[in-house]
Length: 313
Image 1 (cartoon, rainbow, N blue to C red):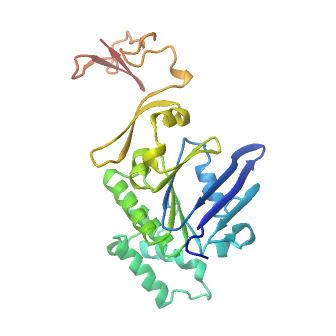
Image 2: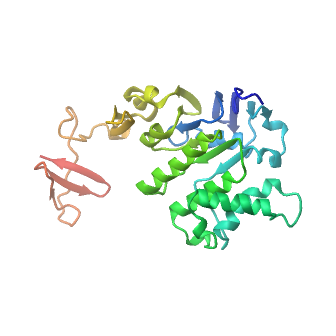
Image 3: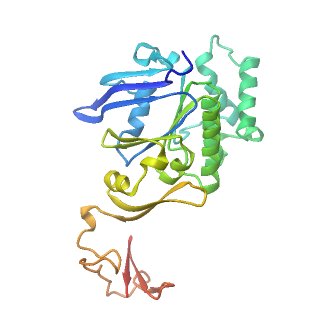
């Protein structure tokens, strides 16, 4: 494949599930060495599209080419040599060690029963060192922290030496440190000419690390481009049905701060004293630990109503 040819080309992709259209006419094209972010609300089709790319789900219509090859004409074992998947969870690990799990990434290259040859071991140990988990290689995956397990999953995909890596919600259960660490690893892989596609809900994090963002809603692509250009308050309102503030920090990085929901379920309730024309949320009359007012720094009182917080002047 020529250097300027796209690693991933999707044309007219449609995916139906028993009459429900999960993807509708997706057209995308990305070259090598890019970190691509898939952003959108739950159910917009991010994970479905990645499963179509890796042939977990067959597409209803359209074509998907990876490294210039139509994946629908390829065996699953052949696809696994050029496309790697990193799931959000490790699943059942059955006492397997970190090294053994990472070694499973070499399975597409098996050509005999006893397949752990010196080259497989070299590639695996190199990946363990690259992702900072070599000291955990004998530890059971089930006993690792969430951050350690996520790095092991990425290392497992890395040893497949794919052209395209698909990563589904890699930071969903991680604290701030490990969120940044995982995204740094993924960005580093993209800089090594591997194309990395990440589905994630943290918009600010994606804008910080991704070269290109794809914004999806209800199975369709709403916008594609540089996150610093396409992520706007109007786009967030249109896609997520929330009001948000979008700005740039001192380093020129995009950040998004959600402000309030615009769904019908909150109509008729005053979410903040400054919201005109809405009724105040009721304060419970029953005395209980959950109805005791707490004084806030701004002099207001907060009442905890189960899962709802109401502000009273």
